Amino acid sequence: MIRPLQRNRNKAIGRQKGYSDRETQRTPQTEGARTAESQAEARKGNGKGLVPASHAPIDQCKIPTRLFELGIGNVVISRRHPSGQISLAIFLLDVYCLGVKDVFHRLVDPSQYANIMAGLARDSPLEDIDLTCARKLIEGAVEYARQFQLTPHPDYKTARTILGEVDAAACPRDFEYGRDGKPFYVAGPNDSPATSRRILSLLEQQCGPDGFHYMIPTDLSPEGV
Image (cartoon, rainbow, N blue to C red; front, side, top):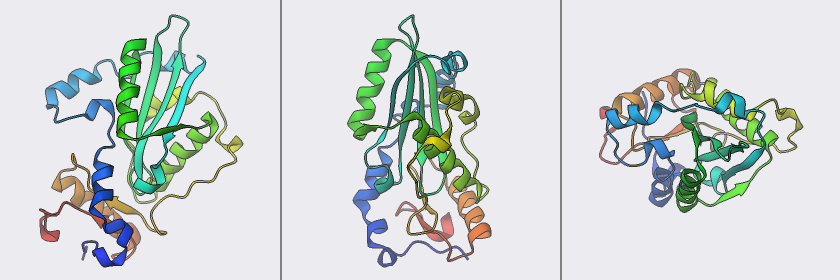
């Protein structure tokens, strides 16, 4: 039987403010309550310019300063073309459980790029990271999630081409996934009850009933998930 996270099991996990902070982490294409039609329109250009971008110079490579505190955040990688346009990939990375939860990838002009980056910085302070470490971080999160049969966002395969051929083994940093040695699933604002049910079922199958933590909205009973 899947049981809800008891707040006294881990005080840091149970803080409502921490949960609210996580909810602000989203890629530009999931900003706001967009309809299915508008999301489809936004994806028409997704990935354009990314494959040739793998050899363009890196413009920025950033991660959220509080990524491992909140457990989720946007990893931003951009490459600037001689034309001035910018290939941009943003990976919404859940380092506690889900790996690459969402992806935004597109060829943008400098003004669009500036607006997107300003919006991301408002959501969460960003810091520079070496591209080798960004690759290690992203791919490590994907592999962690795959242990539990959780697959990355469908656009991940295309978006990851922006990483080019850098070697993750060259990164001297180590990254630890999960929370307190266990996966910790936090239902996001766009996760339906059916999605949460599927994820919790996979976690219970792979980890056992006491092998993971989770947090769901307070208006959902455990039986309703």
